[in-house]
Length: 405
Ligand code: ASP
Ligand code: MG
Image (cartoon, rainbow, N blue to C red; front, side, top):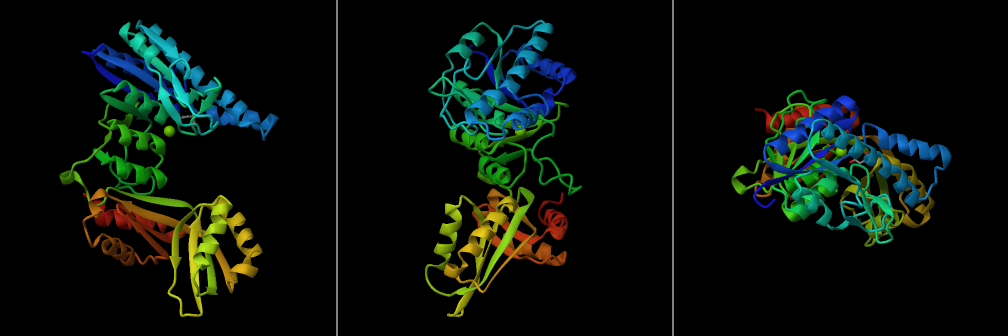
């Protein structure tokens, strides 16, 4: 197999949702094989199977153990590998399906969010040497007790990248129902367009800001092992987006704009202006397992100051309860909160060495008469908090400013 190319492909749930789509995927796989490549495929459960399995479990025991949940959820992928292998058999090609454990996917024991530790590739290599197409169940592995584990929702991307890294594949192609990675969500900005390429770091930021294209950990792993990723559609032959190490000249100032409505703001007004206040507040919040995103603290006047921060919407009630219960100790004059806020962010590796990016972003918002409530910056990202009703306008205004063609 050393002379041949090795491609790892991944097909998501929508790409294999019914018999017709499974046949379509089988044809794409066999075309790559026919072109002279060795092909290993990671596949997700069909359509909404995973959600349906979770519902089934909830009907019986909403507090089922994580081990049994993984036993159940892993069956979704086992169905798709068998069906896909049957489709490839029908086209007359040599193929074999393998579950996670048959494929040597060893994970830790963190059921429901397991991490891949090693892949024992012996079986896969043996099958490739026999010129078989290898179909591997995504999202699952096996731990040291020989129990089935799953990698967390969306984890098939990570299975594919791990396979590509372990097998030293030439490329890892992630097939989905969109054409690639866009400058922003085309549903809210008609001028959004597909990017030809994006760096690992930019993709990581976009993934954690809620651009729902790739599983975060798959990007981390691709970066670590330098796996070249291609994100593309299983429904057409358009060139997708390459995720790779981008050279200096190719660095764009701003590569994408995101919006996240799932955030809520808490403001602690009139907190005593003394050392240790922020520590007290955020330690308490962290101990409750609540993650904080943007933080802002006003200049104190020696007497009092204001501290505000954002959390995910689902964490708002528990965070407020905690703060109110402990206010004897924190002594905020008033605790305010709002869910009607959104976080709008720009991401671009080129902003590291460029001053003026923030000013340009704020100018776009000013021109659109949008008030900024909070600001946070990092090396390759700037986020602002705005009223939720303004978020779509904000995305469009910022996209026009930085990314108009
Ligand atoms: N079937 C799993 C899920 O829905 C894994 C995946 O699709 O990547 O989360
Ligand atoms: Mg996915």
